[in-house]
Each structure stands twice: as C-alpha cells, then as structure tokens.
Image 1 (tube, rainbow, N blue to C red):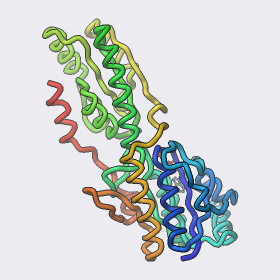
Image 2 (image 1 turned 90 degrees about the vertical axis):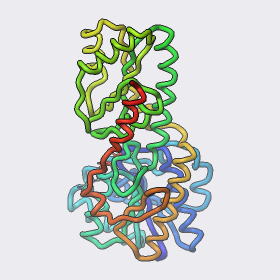
Image 3 (image 1 turned 45 degrees about the vertical axis):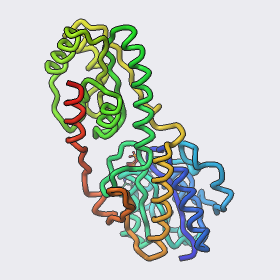
Image 4 (image 1 turned 180 degrees about the vertical axis):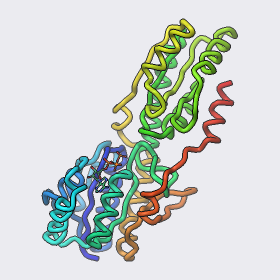
Length: 320
Ligand code: ATP
C-alpha cells in the first residue's frame, strides 16, 4: 500500500489531532504517503484533499478540535455523493482510508467499503464513548475531566451558598460521561437514560441530607436522561430548596486533550496504519483491557455499547 487518506467526521473530540498525527507519521515512517481530506466526507466528495507531510502535523498533539476540520455530510448518504468520492479516490490514487469519528462515520465508511471495496479502518473519536469494540473512545477522558473540573468549581459555590446544583452533561442517548463525572465529582445522584429514576426518591435523599446538616448537593443529569432545567424546576417545586442549573454543553467538546487521550489516539492511529498495511481492512481499532485490539467494522456498527452499571451502583452507594 503506497497512499492512504485520512479524515475526521461527525462531532469533533479532543485527541483527534493526536490521532491524525499518529496516522501521518506512522505511514510516512513506513514509506507511505498520506492525503488529508478536509471537512469529513464533504471534502471527500468535493476533492478538498491535500498531501500531508511530517510538518503538517507538527505542534498539534496537544490541541483540541481537528486540523482537518469535521462535518456532517448529507451528500455522502446518497449514492451520487459516494460516487463522486470514489472519483476522488481514483484521482488522488488512494489505496486505503482511515476514518476518525463516531458510529455514523463508521456507517458511511462501511457502506463505501461495501460498494467500492476501498480498504477502510475506523478510529473511534467521540466524547460520548458510545462505540462498541473499545473501552474508551478518543475524547471521552478529556470530556469527563472537563466535567469534573466544572463540578469541582460548582461544589465550591454550592457549599458557600447552601444550594442544590444540577449539572447537565453531554453523552447523547448514553450515560457514560454522567456516570464517570458523577462518580469522580462525588455527585449525590446521577440520572442516566439507561436507568429509570424517581424524582420522589431524589428529593427524599436531598431532604435526608439536609436534615443531617449537608450544606450542598450536586446532581448530574445526562442530556439523554432528562432536561437539567426541568429537573431543577421540579426539585425546587417539591423541596423548596434553592436550586441552580448548569448546562455544560459544548464546553465538554473542546480543550486540550488529556495525556490519556493523546496516548490512546497515538496507539490507535498507529495500529490503524498497521492494519491497512497488513491488508486487514473493514476494521475498527480500539482499547480493551489496556490492549489495542481490532474489531469488525460491521459488527461495531450494529452493536450498542452498554454502560457499566456496577460503576453506576457504586456511585450511588458512595453518595448514600
Ligand atoms: P458523533 O458521535 O460525534 O456525532 P458520528 O460519526 O456518529 O459522530 P454522524 O453525524 O452520525 O456523527 O455521522 C457523520 C457523517 O457520517 C454523516 O454526516 C454522514 O456524512 C456519514 N454517515 C452517517 N450515516 C451514514 C449512512 N448511513 N450512510 C452514509 N454515510 C453516513
């Protein structure tokens, strides 16, 4: 294999740059050429692509976002759009493709592989951590640390003012970020889409805490479980406690990636190139029990990753 393409697609996540760097440098190390494709599948369709060199990825390992930019491309969902992308594969002489993104990006890559046979390897990059075949996706650790940092700050003011704070975190329809940040941040309650919750129970717990002299409470709400604003309103109505709501939103998507995410991205990026070189395509690379592994792309697309309910229960026990 002489020339491969790399793109980032879907929502950006901290550590994508470290993954791009690893793909480019590992490929060059093995004598290959890399074409950077801009703005996800949109750039693929429009031919917005250019050769990348060692210097193209200098000074990016610590930066959030993605130097290749990312996008959601409706056109790539159409046969016509993918046919145009195939013309660019031909034009740029690509023999393989690395796609860094989430589940949707892998669906697009999988379809393209099926239709045109271009070898593809996916690297999981999303803060939501909702991709099967890996314990962690690139950006999750940074997003959790950002959320925990915010909870720490909120805790200071919650204690000073004797308030109840609701912190809404991201995660789409999963509770990965909520469980991890809630446990690490010492939240009283964590609301996730995977588990039913009772506002009566939550309010009882708040009142019990108040009676034994607790000055503050923090409740972490996954965006997929409920609206933080609505939960705050209801708790205030039921308990009369001064309740404030903070929605962390896109704060969690940016920022300098943690060392964990940089190392993960470097390992996965390098393995993706190795797989393409070895002719092992239509794969997703991931980290399972500390080891870099490969999974079948189509299996990963079809599988729903489950949150660790033991971790969820532990957070609940420790916040008794
Ligand atoms: P994130 O988890 O951060 O949202 P994602 O990769 O899941 O990332 P999506 O918007 O779902 O984000 O998908 C990214 C892009 O992948 C889409 O805009 C589209 O171009 C392509 N894509 C998604 N699903 C398909 C599909 N079924 N067929 C072809 N392309 C697809």
